[in-house]
Length: 498
Image (cartoon, rainbow, N blue to C red):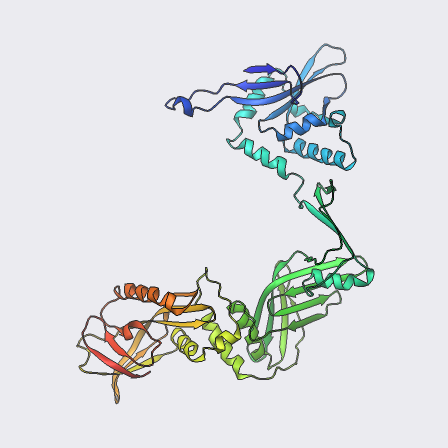
């Protein structure tokens, strides 16, 4: 061990302690670990309890030094007959206490930190009489390689566990309800008379405010909890809206809570009254699941409704049956029917945002797309120049579909198993069962950007299928009619109808 005595205590320690490490065989000189180092401050005391005091300025330096730091106390008995040796590492607890005391000094306008003393006490477990150096070495050796970085991060983050910014908002008492509704996300606008925002550590403000005055705009939100609002109709239709639940309470103002999703907002007062409001416009774009929930609500609303609010971590809250019938609109039946299968098309990485106007602008192509990817049998009737060669029979239909909706191109490659192959009056009838979607996506961009990739991927999959697989139009199922091809044969015919 090497102990280098500091001549002047300007860095807050008396000794820089260095321990040589065991040389590792087979490791090059330049790759050997360096010596283990630590900073040690020595204190002495006669009589009383084992405790000491260090200058706050030095304690602060300990928190910023990445080497392990120790405070050693030589505690002499009152009669002078014995000396006990105590040592404490300047650990997380002492670092936190130091940083808090420094923040208090800043708050109180104390700038001479060398005149502020910081108390450190020792317990019986801290006594290492006769083993002082060996205990320090063992403690250093037990540190992981990233100890310095970990300690540095602690010095920067301790005291900010509850955040480092705190604000005070002032407004007239008459605006309490308006402020609560704003914090719950029910109203977008709120104008306070004065706002002060400060930096805080250990809940202690220090320094000049980051902002003070009347802002042009402010947004305050209570902490959200994931929640779902389910609206069930007695006609069997259920709309489920995913959103966020917030609750807020001011002294004397009562408690209030909210549920907010893209199309539905609900408020709950302390009396248990639940008020639900929904809004939409044809050009409002949102995720497919949100649009599906909205259109399903219109269909469910033709019957009596029950509303259930389910907040993570709480028991669901339900309402009585509500009878407030919505006016029937066939468009919402169609929207609901196409959105259910369409919602399953995007990949996890896709996030298409569509409006109902986007869907209505391409009714024919979207209906065709949905029919191919939805459950239900499909029949192809073909007239062949020559029959399919015996004993080859149709086993599968393989193809792809695509449709442009808004700014996105939806694509899917599907396989349908052949359920029946028979001769009909108009030709060979092929009946196919429910589809298996092999690949699908909803990519931003036009069809011309994505169809080449779709066709290439389809050809790659088609090479893997076996005898008896049927394709129409080289796989493009969106055409009204086209050439039917049986893989592994040269026979072809023309589709007359589906």
